[in-house]
Amino acid sequence: MDILSKPTVYAIRALLYLVAREKENDFVSIREMATELDISFHFLTKILQKLSEKGIVQSSRGATGGIILKRSPASIRIAEIVSVIEGPQFFDKCLLGLPGCGSKKPCPMHEFWKETKSSIKQMLETTTLKEMGRQTKIKKLRLVP
View 1 (cartoon, rainbow, N blue to C red):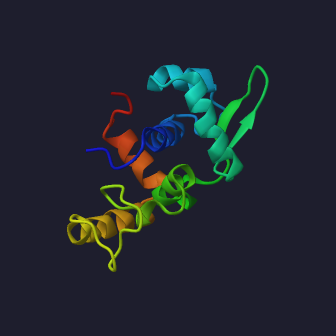
View 2: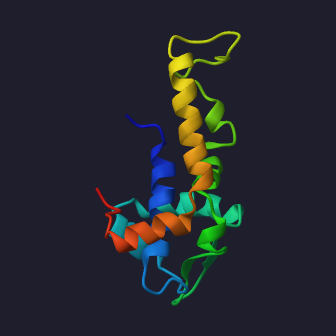
């Protein structure tokens, strides 16, 4: 079951890649990142552009250029990444994709999904990129399929 879109998953994986590197403060080639994460270079570039527009990453051109986190990983919540890519209305969407779903006009899944969605939202709002990156490093968690 895919709750997050592919672009959102790629955004989180790319940011975790930046955090989990030994040299966190060095620019990383987007091409290198795309290859390492098995993501289309052009697709990843578009995702990173959105993150750059929102001040999460910074890009630099040239031989030593690439991408770097613009802010501390401790200040970036996973919910912020989700919101940048999915849009701010992500946590208000119906699981079945029905427009206008809510307590006044619920879909068959509304009550079941409401609690789960609330738990997921809370977890994403309280988890930072630093925490996830630390776990990725310590447990050597994988970022590629």
